[in-house]
Each structure stands twice: as structure tokens, then as C-alpha cells.
Length: 298
Image (cartoon, rainbow, N blue to C red):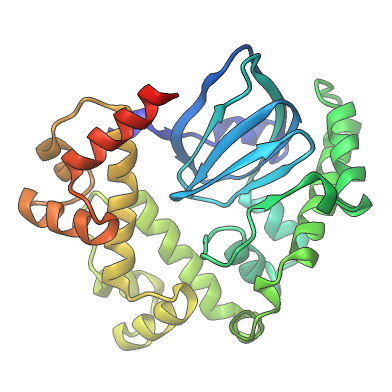
């Protein structure tokens, strides 16, 4: 089922962890259907306007705006300008973030770019972008298409500068919760592995006890750390992850509710429907109807 929406990061293994590409939208319409991947992604609009969706957060990005898609976020882009538009996307492998931060702080930085909290900033308007943002963006765009080793090094340096500018500008990482987490790199590293494991295996019968055992932690301590890092209990996070992937299948395929429930890890259709409504406020069938109406309007 993953072929419908899970984008591989294999292409990054051949580009030193960074990929820069221009995307041209020839007319108004969907440029990228809802999809998900393990990379951090940034897009910079150079022409036109786009409606952006990131984990059910929706906004419009215009020329000169920068958008962040954290790891494992469901995101889509829709050109709203009649003549289309153009943007550059920067795909970034998580290992580059680790290398940028160094071993001591790598878990915190990976955590920052992997979990989408409601207060996390995802859109920077053109007038908010200082030279700390625009200089590396300009370099990345001007060197797009080149593939020699000097360009690869330049891409890495400029991506690191851009990620650093995002971190400096973010209010989230300055919060009390984040300051506390910065001092807990060992548990953060384990929780990062736990969330990655959930995103890779949500369709199976995952149990918190098994994840704790895999990480070499006691179940009680694992639950405490997980709740502190994600702000949610393990079961709730797992359910939200399954519903997140179900939304993509409901949006992109003609699979039945029964097949989608099974594909994302639910053995019971009724339980899936209850959990889906708990998360979204509507049933899966109502979600499909609403999505198709919105798509028809566009």
C-alpha cells in the first residue's frame, strides 16, 4: 500500500544527503498529492502562489516565501495561480542534520525537524527572511543542476546555514520544554528511534512493550520518556500515526474503508472508524466526500 504515498529517500544516498530541484507548475492545479517521506524538505517559491497542507495545517505561500516540511509530515502543494508557478525544493537526509549538530546534540536537532507541534513555525513570508535565509537560498538555486564534488560540498554548507537560520528564528526550541529536552540527548535519541520505528511499522501489531525492549529500556521509563518527548502517550501517538497515513490513502486511492483500515494496522473496521472520527471529527466516508468537494472546487 505504501507505493501510493511513501516517497523513498534512496535518491539522497547518491547526492551526499541533499537534493535541490526546481518544480515548474504549468497551470493551476495539484502539483504534489499528499505524500510522506523520511527526509526534511524545504520549498522556496520563486513564482506564483501555492496552497500548502502540512499535517492538516493549511496556508498559502507566495513568491519569496519559504516552507518547512518536517520528517514524516503529510504534505501537499497546489498551484493556485492561473498560470501556475515555480518553486525549488530542498530534500535533506536526516544524517546531514546529525553531522551538522555533532554527536552530542544530534538527537535534539533531529527531534526538532521530525516532530510537527502546533506551535512550530512552518512558513516564513518573504519579508521575514533575513540575509541568513536568503544568502544560502540564493547559492542553492544558482548552483542547482551542477553535480561536481565542489557543488555537493557547497550544497551541504548552504543547507546547514539555512537550517541554522530556521533554528535561530524558531520560538519553539527556546521554550522551557525544549530547553529541558536539550539536556536529555540519550533519551531523545531513543525516542527518535521509537518514532521512526512507528512510522515504518505502524501497519503491524506494534506494542509499547516491544519498542521499549528494542531500545533496551524498561517499559515504565520508555512511556515516561516518550510522553515527555512527543507530548502524547504511546497508544495515542500510534493511533494518530495510523490515522495520518489513512488520510493519505483516503485522499489518493479508491481503496475501501475496510482495506484502508487493514493497511494502516487496524483489525476492526468499527474501531478504525471510531478512532478516525475521534481524530478528525468526521467518519472516513465523510472525509472522502469533503476531500472530493474541495478538489472539485479547485
